[in-house]
Length: 70
Image 1 (tube, rainbow, N blue to C red):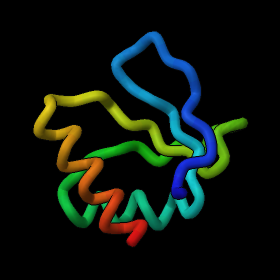
Image 2: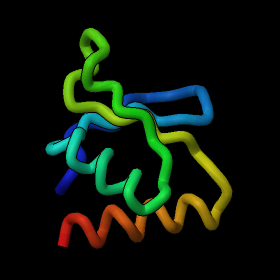
Image 3: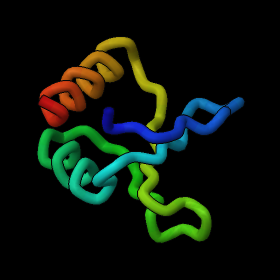
């Protein structure tokens, strides 16, 4: 699996610790899927911030992550 930890959230975004966070960030950006690389933030090594979007946006994100992992 790509994800290591999904931190609890009470907001409209998730902080997700991932293997290869920088590579996944670049891959998603290349597909026009906007996430935030938080790897340079203290205590957020290898983490992406993913905003919860519309059902269609969420589906696109999940499909892209599945393709990346394949």
